[in-house]
Image 1 (tube, rainbow, N blue to C red):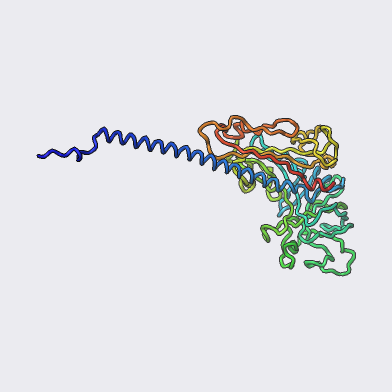
Image 2 (spheres, rainbow, N blue to C red):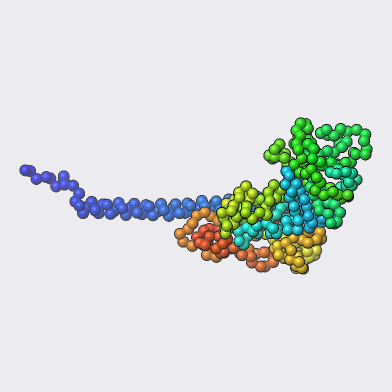
Length: 431
């Protein structure tokens, strides 16, 4: 047999093993490089998510807060702000009575109203109320009782229309209440013919009979609705008082989103790492069973506390007061101090301004918000919590280090912090 030429010999076992080792080493290096690159990609992507979530959350709250007090802020010492914010205000929305009182006041802006279940530990709850009245809002028009659900306006009822929601403030000791206008006799629109009856030409009626839907969205007067805000019996039987126009009443069965927005009353809270909101006019926001936190995540009711933005871990708010402290001048339109909900009144330590004079000194708010990335980092990337200067040279801890407020491995996440000052234009304009 002829010998096989050496050039036809295959790889030896040693050569094969060396080749395999080199290939495995190359794959290992490639996989390591891909793993590092993927880690950077995820960090960048989730960091962007944290930025987006925080920006959306901040914008949403800012938009509402800028409108705080519209329609209820006046210069009257016996007006809506003076009487309703520190008293009791009643509303009947679709047969369910809503009560605003000293704990959950009918007020432009409140930090940590009592009676509302707490949010995630270390975070504040914010209440915002404003109306959607068309045109500038002035002082209320005086009214006198004619009959049940019927008042005579001794001032000019111009600007009041069918379907508008009105806020009525009576005499001292009486609760404020809300009602939906169903008729304006002698108005000449939507079934109220214009004649020569000077007796009822200034009447405002808000009974439970069907009426035309607000004419801002229904100028042809073709749609009638049952008043959503008027119970069969009066919430309060006033003798005299003042009426304030809060804008078109909401009727989602006709228009889910009215052309002109009406009354808005919302709460914002951080619940189980999400920014959530509760509509106080349609839900009972005081029920603990509907409100979850990181401590009790199983009780979330997303139909009541609606999620707006994920991975929000802290929210803090401060009142901006023109009270003349810290060397300032009271009532000059300049914020002199920033106070939290326990400092708003240094005598009573209540969570809201206790008088009309102190409400008039509320000009702005400062809010801070912290969002968290979704990416869990293998190594600790956040070595210290985030503190916020309250404007009075005092640092406020935003609670990242609290195991109840964030996961116990909080150091393995990245965070984005946001801060802004929101002037309450309607509080300033009234001056």
